[in-house]
Image (cartoon, rainbow, N blue to C red; front, side, top):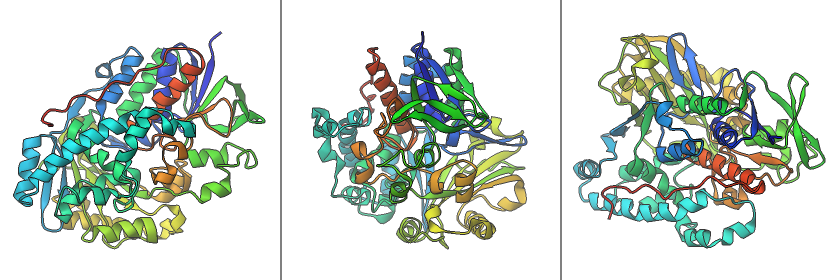
Length: 509
């Protein structure tokens, strides 16, 4: 008889786990509260306009290829990938940088704007390649016990964690100019953290992009979620959308299955939680069942920032604007501190804008396009009253776009619009305190100090997603699925899913 696995939540981590386990012969059932798959990596449709809800950057695509290969599939059969040769434009107060994976082109761009810093870029790429090679085995290995910290591969990687240096400090070794440092540290926003607080190890985030490129799947990054859902079903798994889990069905420490919102109890041999971690622990489990992650203790954890989102369907296409644009506030450090420490709304906000229509004509009718605008903002520990603030903040964001970018007369071209505030993230999409990037990535909440893939407080219970090891961001979420699946396969005496060496990067010493 097949072993039954229940996956709670159809986010990318849950779908990667379901795809892999179904392909290995398990009886897999995914229960998803929403009527769609993808979690934060879902599609938003506004009439004829289609958007990614959350992630819009897809890097480290070789991880996707490895996981699909483990399920005897090729992602090329499910998604059409386009590599962005100009990865993104960075807009500062007095200059614009166009970032590229092409090493010669990138060095020339740096030398043009910041003479003498091209050599620092070469050092950054070469030295961070070695850091990436040392840290990758840690990101691919379980960290469920303190003894896992003393594996040779982990001990070898420990110096690369740079525990006494922030991400900003690390980039200061390579670049003399403030804007150039920010150009290689802003990726800490993927973790919802400040580059002045984010551990130095995360210099690998910008390296990943510059070494392995950024891709756009035609139809949006949400196509990855749909592809993994499709493979799950092809391999005999079941995905139940619009079918939420009310609670875990437990007997003492043991998880026996789940109780659905319709009252039905479904038994399982193992349960994998892909819901937002803190939301799941405060809603799916009785408050007295947990000690380490009780509601009171969860409130004291450190969490990422949130995001304010605008999804705009336009009656035009901004053909001369890039696919991705990042706009820096005049005082970026002040902006970041207002978000992460003071937890107030900035008067001068940094922004990210996706203009996917210049790459992908499938997202809107001919002659029209979609625009996705994201502003990092405080999470809901701030107490900000978003119902009263949202329209004022929307005005501020659109005025910033008008003043600092080439998206001129934007408001005149808006046909349809959707807004997501931190309140919406929390209330509608079930993200704890609206902390879009999950638990923070301070060293005190990483590796063995992060909730374990084999959940330490309950038996027959596993975690995948940004709230467990190795952390948030699509590549790491996919790795969390591989770690969890390998834990189940190993416990059942089955062959595990291998990891591969990092692909070679052209042009590195």
